Image 1 (cartoon, rainbow, N blue to C red):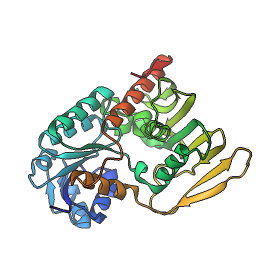
Image 2 (image 1 turned 45 degrees about the vertical axis):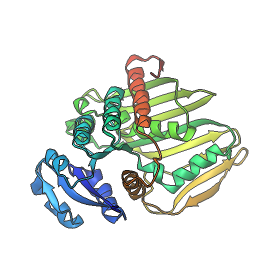
Image 3 (image 1 turned 45 degrees about the horizontal axis):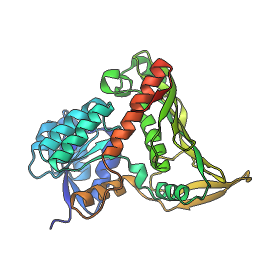
Image 4 (image 1 turned 90 degrees about the vertical axis):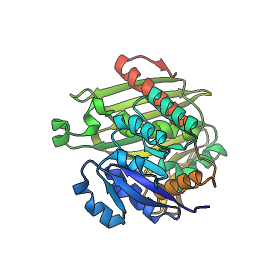
Length: 337
């Protein structure tokens, strides 16, 4: 039985170059065999730096390569559905970048294709694999903060005036699945569902819109059963925020501004009990969440682990994102389908 898998990468997106390719090449159970790009002349230095055997001039060449076991899809959001399904139909397992699709209907079709093909499909949610995230989820579950009532989460950054004015970025193009909610708000929605282990029933939202039509600053609220609430903030026009807080009846867990991507340094958080003004700092060892995710995916392909989350989880996140986007457009409170 083989001990590793061969990966193919679709495109040379920043996330692939900076995080995923290095994670695969440093993993114990995978190697990047091929990179497919529409600009192969620009990919030579990537191949040389990471010792990638094959550069293909198209995505199709990657998924048609018989030696490729799994594909990583970090293409713009509007191409997640098409190229994930095409890869699955060519017999490849797929790790798809977040958000998995542009809407819940697309996500459901992707999951159905994977299931009927007997192949693995997983949304790339590296934060869930980090030891700090795992510890916080366990603390909430075991009652360390009493009964949880609220998660406040924000993932915001400033794209810069030049890009905002030109609109020359996939994040600002509605036809490419752009918008702050889709790009970074998906983290907060995914996190709230995962930490609380519950599904929201009703959402409300407000948004500020870019001239292109996408949301550039988004505020949403989620109501779960049993008096659980969550707030979501996502932005392209504010100072950096990447944090969340979990509030319970007997304590509060607070994270600094590296909540979703702590990289490999020691990861800290603060736990404050009911009446404390200054909490106690806790830490978990440094870890590469991307590498942990990549190795988990490979172990799933090799049949040696059980999934941390199933692909249906991604459909449920997309259902919430769909409802939030509609709530912002209409100004109405909406039920999540």
